[in-house]
Image (cartoon, rainbow, N blue to C red; front, side, top):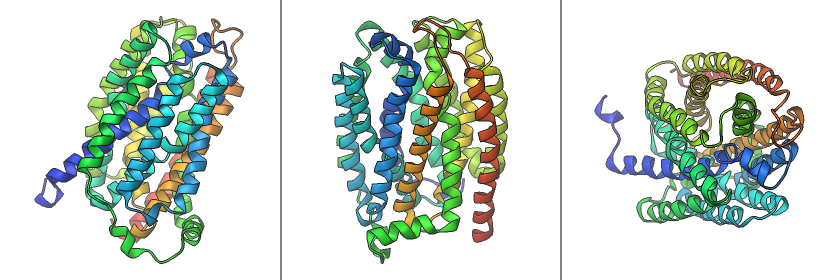
Length: 407
């Protein structure tokens, strides 16, 4: 690695802080899926209502992203990060205090308003601080927070939920997030070089970002990326317990093993994304995901080992798509547009995810809280179509960047 491609000590600390914030935000959202079966049985709700709980976070995050887009590039990105992360902590605390379906939906809305913007702020910081040929590795390390959430976060959360109640994981996240908030406040430097480039007022700036036809390609590609993930993700634990036949005590180990696999491959994916063509890396991962989804949704009563193998391959495909896709998307906007672009992009991602969770809740059915999920294979077929469309959309993003920058 050449000297100019090496990270400085401060850049390494920034990666660590962003990865840790990503860990807590991702864990807060991802824990809903493994808690799904326990939550459905604890407060006696159906798949449609569970879909509403999941989508309430995503939709509120999407709305928040649009509102944030109008002023995201008008402030120091560090201040934005701390403000929204603080709100996320409060929202997560409310989730832990929830005792009913209605209050939980309200709490997820509050958490989504703040947590849903965190990814866009982090991506804008990455695009400001790191060079294009570094961003794949940075994205890879930041997305390791996803793997860590499965290796440690979700197993610990499920252990707490199994031994206390389903609210316990949210208290765990709050305690950890407070420590990370303090570290970010102390260590991060202001990120405000983009302020020198501002010319338009916030509303005009947001509209000019939305109306840019090249940016719209990235927005649509990201929305389809989100659709493919949210359709199946909320039903993971319900499917594993009621269809495949594993016990709730097996869930922590399953998520830990799959998380270890994801954690191990993420740095490799980041390096490959920088070393090789990002679009080709994305396409290969997409094909891998299509194949794994085909087998996953058709699993019936099976062994724990088979579930691990299929789940592990599918998660590798998901993350191997995400890293090069985000690296390409983050390279679309100009510096003065990055905050607005990332906020709009994240909001569309969340809105698409919220719609997908609701659609999933309408497609899958369950006769009782102990019955297998039905129509789950139909979700897999829909995901496959969405992934294939996403490949075409991502190619258009890659083609524009290649022609613009001659990379």
